[in-house]
Length: 352
Image (cartoon, rainbow, N blue to C red):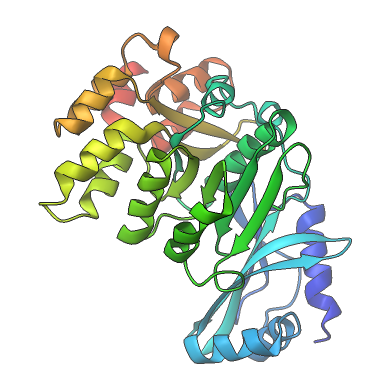
């Protein structure tokens, strides 16, 4: 197979408005449209086909990395076609690949129909804002839209640390320093340690994977920076537990104290299939106030959920159940979809 085939394939992925392309041996290429996988009308690929297609897209250094580690993550820019986040891996000895489309035009918060509270949150001078959810739930897109909003309205230095770099922002009012782990810096933790000397106002951390990175993020948020990060958690209170659980028992009281003072908000989102096609993001939103700070400090995270259900007009908070109910009322999703994606199915059933 010639290398133009893979480019043609990626071009058709972009043209169809699909989010991903999967190449696995003994299967036709598959694309993900509105959350569902669909085969492309092409012959099944062999491992050799895929290897030839995939190797045509990478440098010698990347090829060497892949042959040593059997895994490769990188960002790919094809002029006139688009940007992609790619992952090469092996399955039963054969090369396989997953490509995720990264839009070149960064959507605004209004384009995404994001809750109005987001525009308030990004006005904060310091603190930690987390956007969480499973893979493919639109976390990167929401964060890119938040940074885009800041770029249009404020003059700041924004340092992003990602693996690999996804959205590339054009400097409008802000100056962006995009750093790719493995390309521009050794690790998230290293980049964060040195970020402090780069005079940033805002830091975006692509993934808070380990203890060192989480600790550095909390410290940066405490010392007067606005820090954005992501975690793979599905609920807002669950996110706080996940962070605390990374630390040992005797470190936890101090970490709880740090979170209680520096956490601004947690947005836990999921992308749901919309009636009539497309997808819609359901967000559970936790905004730290005095009551929530106290619950975190006193190790009563389990009580946060009921706090989120109270007095929401003033706080901008919402539970996932409330977000789903609103979508059903607005005719955006079906009741079945709501139940399928609900974090609290019993609560959802009762509400319906």
